[in-house]
Length: 232
Ligand code: SF4
Image (cartoon, rainbow, N blue to C red; front, side, top):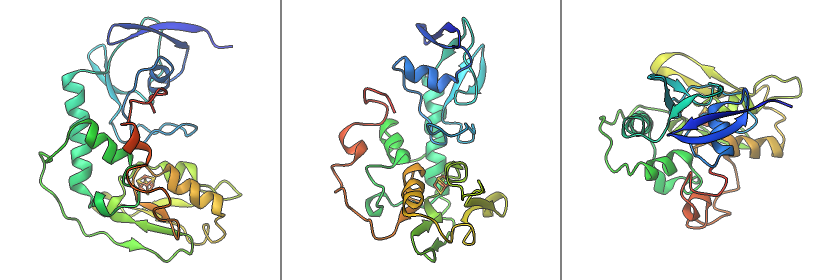
């Protein structure tokens, strides 16, 4: 069994198993650190930067940094919250997010964080990038307008040989997450559901399953993100 260590989050004494990542260690101590690319059970990627914390004056991603004995971590500060808010604003301006018309509204982590950070108007100009929608797969509707490139789908959805069904295509501003139609040919209903579940936004939707849970009764309609007992 791993050794228990003591560390501090915003000067509150916490304990966790040695070697566990800051986001997980915070959660076990009832402290929420916002994140969009991190997901329970998936290898952390540190790609969205929303979980950025400060340790010894250095900015680090909490999902990829293990806690250490005596570590002092700053999480809930005005500077860090403004950085997180700026990242969320960038995501809204870079993509085309139309929350009222999205099936994921109320279950969307990006939308929930926008509410948490009280974002009304982003400080950055909207890009209005042209993105396509891929509705050619029999089970999955893939809207590139809403993708935040968190790579959760790449890490979570694999075929029987362990190959990722989703992959990056192109580079820089043209970058896309694509569903490999050959690998995804026999995608089971369970994996299609899982893909929709792991996607933090409404980029991956399962066809024919819309609005089973009415708007107003969804996850973050009831409890704002980070405020449930298990702080997820
Ligand atoms: S499709 Fe969804 S899960 Fe995949 S990278 Fe885009 S936002 Fe993340």
